[in-house]
Amino acid sequence: MTTVVHMLRHGEVHNPEKILYGRLPGYRLSERGQRQALTVAEAVAGHDLVHVVASPLQRAQETAGPIAAAHRLDIATDENLIEAGNQFEGLHVAVGDGALREPKHWPKLVNPFKPSWGEPYLEIAHRMLGAVHRAREAADGHEALCVSHQLPIWTLRRFLEGKKLWHDPRRRQCSLASLTSLVFDGDELREIVYSEPAGTTDPKVTGA
Image (cartoon, rainbow, N blue to C red; front, side, top):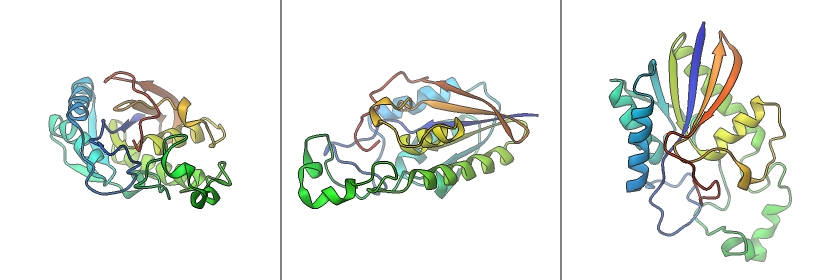
């Protein structure tokens, strides 16, 4: 029996301060992000979705809204889909700028393989995998859609593909409002399919 779990990255966020907002409350979708959510809703309109679940953060809930409404489903919330924890949350962290230039922050950068500045990659992968299997069970034989965030989705994908979890953020294949679809036969992963119904975006978008 085939079950598909779509991992959807939320749409663009209104972030005029250009900070890494992480898990901070109150960050909503921009007008472009709202259009992206509608585009994805149109793209999956003909899919056999029976379960929609999202990170508790506002941008994820807003992205899930049009999709759930189109399929007449309630939005479930799973804390394990939340953005990765990060000690630079609320700061400017562009390369060569902001917090990264301040010596007081340098001790946070000693181990990029863990990483030392935030939630360990392996912990992200494990919690995301738990969310995936809960969604798979809820949609057994049909399709589920989980709205999460760039780093958690990309970490999950690398974990499932057996790759090292440490990576160059500039090379993530996880555009805004993109779908990383996990195809299961029973409880066994058969295939990972990536698509960009709302188009390609820069993987370096701050705090996304």
